Every structure is written in structure tokens, then in C-alpha cells.
Length: 253
Image (tube, rainbow, N blue to C red):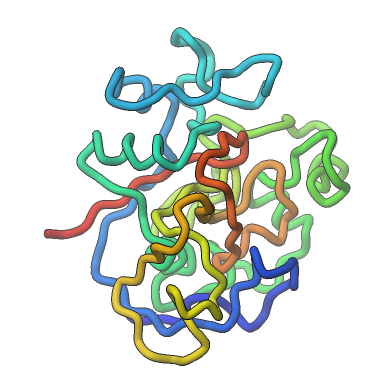
């Protein structure tokens, strides 16, 4: 389908986040995994993929452990983009493009502001909908949901939120962990990949600077605003971050 990638209605966080100017995009039909990749799935790939950063004192919110343990059904996180790419390839899949991810999160041509049918939700509504704002020691916005509901667990949640299910039946696009996409990062006014005109872009994928990639979706330590379908974030591709995981896609041959 064809849609407008980005949004004119956004909070100005800065050029590494701002989803403007909008881009007219057509994406071919594709499959997207219903769930984020789990530790157990990644572990099953054995020596085909590099080990992500382990759970431990360095980062207690990383889910991968040296031996199978209590986090096997948790969403994998703390992995570089090349590891995410390799894991999807080992399963006969690939990372989704930024355009594909947003198309799915916005309910395809519905172009919903969120993955779910919420009209002008409050931060409290979003705390109930998805795993967001659960970072104990970060900024006030990053722990907003913990302040509202002190009994919530800190960090990501195995299986995410039962209410974080999109129009298309895809789980945890709004929160839990953000997800690597295939694109390198460029601002939407950068003609290297995008641009300020409204030329139709067919199945775009940005290849600009492979040291800087893009993650999509809200996550357990993000402010509730990040649950928007249009939210984007630049992330160094070599970083292994507890708020970034992976979900795979597959083209239809």
C-alpha cells in the first residue's frame, strides 16, 4: 500500500527524532513477525550469530544469559544491528525497513497515530496499554509509569503487555523493547535517502552511513510519547542497548 511516512503532528525532540517532512511511500506486501524475537529463539541459532551482551552487573536488564535460565521467553535485547541482521537471516527472514515497520504499526493505510485504536490517549492510558516509562533511575518521563503505578516491574517484561496488540494483531509495537530496522539513519530532509519533495518512494531503504542506524517503537525506559507509530530514533549500530531488540520480516517472493 501507499502511505505518508512520518507525521506533521510531533514533539520536536531534535533532528535525530523528528519525523518531518513526510514522505510518500509505497511498500510491497510483506510478512512481519507477530512477536519480538526471544532469547530462546536467538539461542537456538547457536554459533551462526554472535552472542549479545549478557545479563549481569554491567547491565541487569539484558536478557541473554550464558546458559538457559529464567529469561528464555523474554524479548532479546542488548545486541548490535549486525547481530540482529544475522539472526533474521538465519531464520530465512530479514530486518524490516523503516517504512515497513511504520506501515505495520500504523495499521497500514489507516495511518493510526498509535498501533491501537486510542483517541487522544493520556500518559496514564499509555502506561496501561504498553510497557513504557519503567526506568527506575532515568529522567522523570522515563519512569512516569512507575510513578503512576509503583507496583509495576522495572525493566522489560517477558511477553510484553497483553493490551499492546496492533490493528493487524502484532504484539508490542508500542512498547517493551524498541526494534532495529534495516535502514541507516538520515533525516527526512536529507536527499541522500529521503528529501523535501513528495516524489513517490518505492520500497525505500536508506543506505547512508552504516555506523548510525534506526530503532523503531517505544520501550520500557522511554517516555510514553514514543509509542507513536511515527516515532524514530537514531542509534549507533555497534551499541548493545537494553531498550533495543529485534523483530524480523520476510518478503513475499
